[in-house]
Image (cartoon, rainbow, N blue to C red; front, side):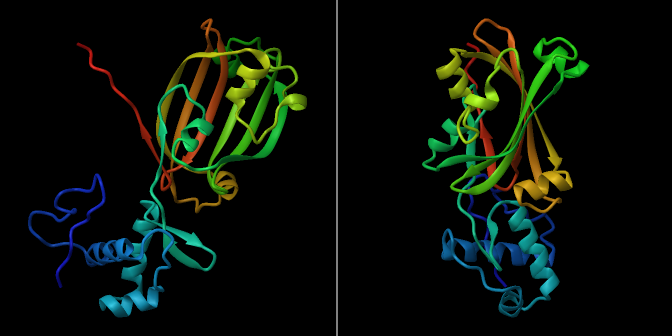
Length: 254
């Protein structure tokens, strides 16, 4: 059997084949299925596990392992009772731009579903980050992030009620929080500190995003400041690892 190399951007030149040339059977099947995905095109319906096992002459568990990896990599997605070829990953810039702007730049329609908007006494750790008084009221805005009605992330925003007193009355939860602050309150963003890590979603988070708990997530912690340098918000955002990648421009130091 001739195993074609992966042709996706960023794929390893030798397609993951070790120097001794021996590769796991599931990986050989995975490369064959990857070539099939290119033929089917975005949205194309993948044959069943049984059909694939017959086509490649392997056990269904071997096919299943190959499909699991392709799902985790974002090459495939579940659709109803079948599996289809996924589109390219969304690229989100690591910059002072809203989720709305990043999605729209790629020709997709952003959206959000409100999970909760609550106020609670500010705990010590959060008070220190946003320079609030311990115990003063703070908003917690939790929303599922959408791209063309596909659930792709979960965002939690914490902001002092004193800074945004009418958030529950004046803010459309399906819209950009950044645009609301700028257009309605005249608050501009000046800088932010971000930290990125990979995590597994909790059972609750996985249910809200609509993914298996074992799917890797990209977690971004952000503390944003206004143009005067004063901390404004703390945001915790989970992005699906199979649907997102992040980009950054690194200017020359010379």
